[in-house]
Image (tube, rainbow over all chains, first blue to last red; front, side, top):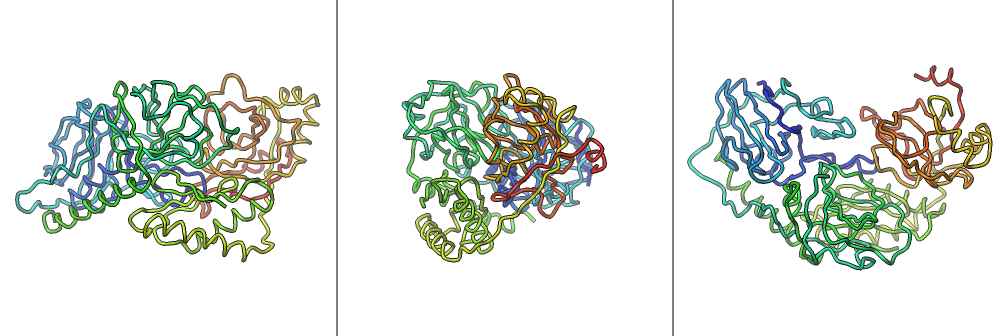
Length: 307
Length: 224
């Protein structure tokens, strides 16, 4: 089956859950910035959670499917088919997305996943390293992607319990755990409201707000960072790192976004506002366990409903 | 040895304080031991500077406290098993100056030496890989002679070709990918620092010993 990109939108890439196990070589995790959304839409078409799908940014693509298949769309609202449910697509049908009405990144999964070669264990596109996806680059008008010939049937009438979705909003309060240098800052991240600047991409989001000054602390050596690390350069304006962030950073780390709230940051767009609230590490772990339990329940519930 | 959380999905095992021979060897030994026999829930092991960062899956690690106890036990065991394991030594051929290193003259002037002497200083030093990061295959090297320390350029270049050898402050390194960059460019190596198609994609790894060797433009061309 062929998936033709009629219009690519602003930045559409093939993504999965990224490259695990290659950080020692300096290779970022990559993969879907809102990994939860991709996992969920994959489950909704009967795929493994890590199957490759499409990630689009701010303006969605227009796509043509050569044969009948089943898709699911999630993440931000880009118009097009209803989100968070399996949708049958006929042979030759075009599916069109527009500008994001809410959120920043949309995800599309289709039955069987997108068939591009895995590079270092991932089909995800790492733009800066020109790895994975379609020739390591963003999709362009006219590109043709291959996918499995699979049209899974939806059995019965059902919908998912939307309480499993992250609380997407244009003004989220994001939970963070303390970073290694948190004690060296005069201000705290949790005092004020930050605006999302236009300097935002798959590597990170630069925020603007009350300057978070650092007075104490020794000269820092570079240190490992993760998606979700909030680092503060000398200008006091925090940067939240995302999926494509480099593996080592040189700025002090004030905090790290709790894993379960990373989707909220992934969906921020320029002009949105964000607040932070600190939670203990144990609470962040508890949140992960709760979410993974909910996903496991959903996975079980979907068994036999899409096949 | 200290354990400190890096968010809710990783923990940093700091083996410092310094970055001397012993620390580098401990980092290498612990990273290899953990990678060979991963504790439950561990998904990635990253040696960097005087630490090893361990990435875990909170669902499968048996709890954070359990993981930390396991890591502490591993560190103790690695200490005991630490023998005179040799680090790898690699040589990186570099064509210095000219179109490959347009800033060599400035770096030499800053050091108060001739370009030839600057090359001799750079290629005469022993370097250690303190970490791989920043970009795939990029090595943070320690050991740049102090005379060659040169501030970053005021205006970064838009495109620095892959393989370019640069100096930024007290650091020297090789750009593995074509990228914008603010370092002073002194030469280029024909070697590929990173190649996703290789079994070991990154040429260098943390703990390696590195030396640079000056090669001629003809040799550079022959490598390709």
